[in-house]
Image 1 (cartoon, rainbow, N blue to C red):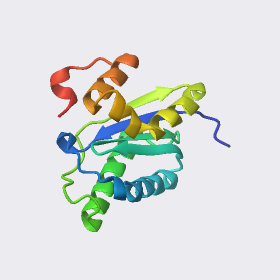
Image 2: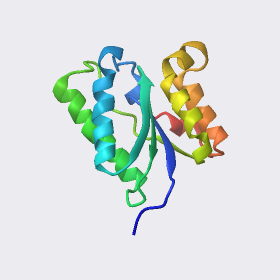
Image 3: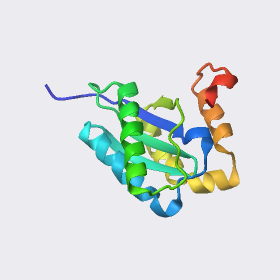
Image 4: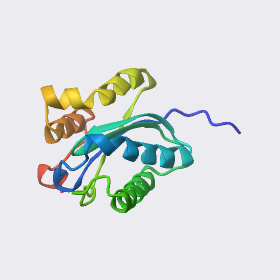
Length: 150
């Protein structure tokens, strides 16, 4: 039977300790690697982008793929690729957790633009911590601040 689903996720996670190690000049190689994993898992990728210390990924999640396993695979595979290629010399790993926020299909184009313009957003508005807390609050996710940025 064909798939008739819409599971739109914005996934957000940072480097370990929010270390600003993702060099602009080589980030596209990371994005291409992540895109390959997502496509292989039959997810539709709308946008991947980020800045020195964190990523945003907008996908339509395939209904047979558990979100937590997908993120585990993304982090493990990309960590290995980063270390093998040396594209981010100061990379120490990814943060333990992540944020994953669902949206209606009507929000897709605004989200694509938001993710596309991450550098400008962080230059003018908020840092990663402020952005992440805002996303948690906008999505009515309860949190304890002492555990958010482990």
